[in-house]
Image (cartoon, rainbow, N blue to C red; front, top):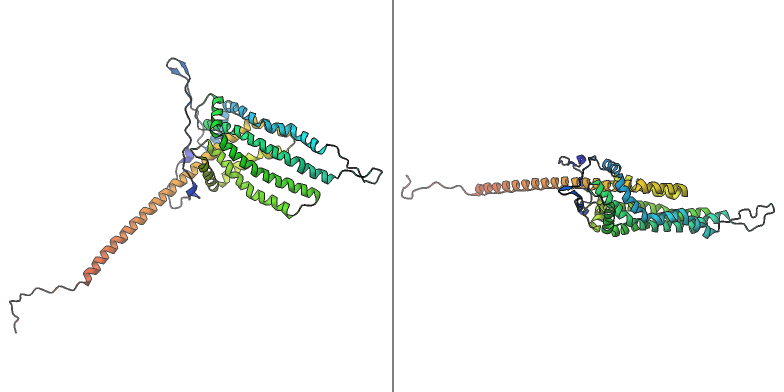
Length: 377
């Protein structure tokens, strides 16, 4: 790619931060799908499409060029998201009516003949937050963990489309990715869901306490600290998801490389992270109708766009870290050569100077005199 060209080596080359954690791994090589033989001696053509060299530009072009192929993989991904839409579209309302009853009397004790003993609006809203919203949040989190299994196959298909690893058997390719990476995605998304649920629970608890008028410093601190620490921590598993199906890395290596990529590409990772969380936030704050529409959009296009964007993020981050590693190694090698040359010169000068000093300390030699000749008196 054009922007993968290494920059000229110079003393000002940027250092690869946390380079000791980085594993310089290649892109995963996928098994080639057997060519379909049309007639004797004539195999199926496999045209290579000309996509841009830029990372995210390539992702969007691949989405347009491979739309139907990716759509087939996303339809299988939908099977793993059915629990989410069932709870969001139907069970949430049913659970609310089951828990709260749905009938309230807020007209008690108004002084115009109505009997006392009416429901308290503050207490009812507080119950809505803690006894309905909180359990539903945890239920939806559990459905996201189930959906992570299908995400493995979807990411694998997106990766092969991004790098033009030809495949026509979408069903077989999807389940191939599922079989390889399901446990990695399951573990990683579970960690993300736990962090996200902790952040959401802190907000729901604060809203419940504010409704009752009993919100203290602890409720506010819980929100502040859970988001200060939780938001950056969410970036690590997010980047790990982009690395699993893309690069030849073990689970532990992917974890360490994710930290290195975040430190060396903070802006890119933050932008992708915010855009990735946006649909979930919109579904959470919007009504049921808007949430269902967003879900359909994500099924038809959104999940494939995000999968390709994650692959592009991993490819861009790993390429940048690779170039920095190469430049740092060149600079270190030049530094070592310069130091060795300087030390050799110092040793040479020291050796010659010592010989000259030794020569200077020797007493001058006396001229030879024949003892047979006598000096004249």
